Length: 386
Ligand SMILES: *[C@@H]1O[C@H](CO)[C@@H](O)[C@H](O)[C@H]1NC(C)=O
Ligand SMILES: *[C@@H]1O[C@H](CO)[C@@H](O)[C@H](O)[C@H]1NC(C)=O
Image (cartoon, rainbow, N blue to C red; front, side, top):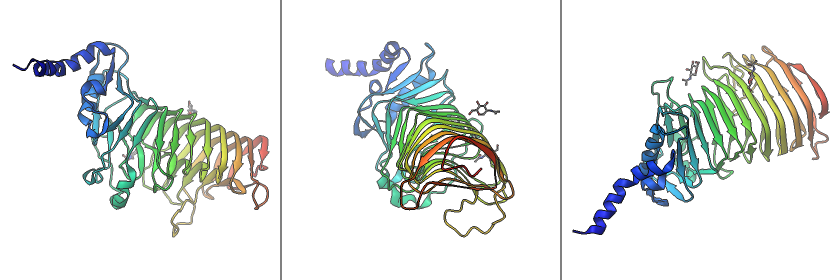
């Protein structure tokens, strides 16, 4: 009898049990057999650790812990419901496989039936994007539909358009998450959300080829605090007016953030279509811009590829939006551009202490308003057009 082998086996069998006893609700993927070499498929270890953490009944804390190292994870679905709020703490780098067969999937990491999820730890998710880009043509598939009210999906790359796609989620937090891809990565939002509520993104860095955070239809109670955006396209609400029956965007608060070298700073965009919805109760405060092309912009004639036929004006009503303490530098002379709909003019737009400098050839910073109702106070540089 080879005792060492036997011992080895017993250890393997006991590991999850030991993990359970020793962890106090913290489940380390390494204890579940993750190789952490960036090559071996660690999906099973992640799933096993998730299942234990999710079902943990021993206390308030449930944490799936990924220590430093590189982990290759194939598309996985982390399923709930869990016995309470759960945390995914990632110190390492989680990589998607470089394998063509995964590129047709529109998800990488998916959470289902999970409520109260915190993702944190300084995590880096590496979608290994460049390998996937040539295959991106089939991008526009619909999201998987599973029992709609309960499904919460977060897909991260290789999905074509978003690193994280938050869909039908409630009560989810990103904390100290780094999402970094080369500037040239095409049309890839850092975090996109839709039909979701109580989403908080805090103390994170998002550098990507497209929107830093994009807030789509049906987003409610969203908090973005202490986030660095750039490079990329900045923060975007919208676009709205794309599909029938879009739900409103309401209750967005963004504060204490920095936008560096982005195409837009704070943007709300809607197509000039007849599709109705509302954007309201939005507040941006204490935002620093560095060399941002369009620091403050409402664009209700969004039509990026041209050829939009309906020039009646957008039917999306934008109201109760405040921009407070927005400072820094603009990379174009049009630092404030509020181009609202002639049919549904913007209501109650407030500018308070806006100080944006432009020092280029086009002369001093300017503001432009169309169909805007609201008021301005405090410092106004450029002078307000409201
Ligand atoms: C989002 O919610 C709205 C309103 O509840 C609904 O009409 C729409 O179909 C939902 N979107 C998706 C893609 O499920
Ligand atoms: C506006 O949004 C904030 C969150 O940003 C929320 O706390 C507040 O209750 C909302 N106000 C109204 C009147 O809905």
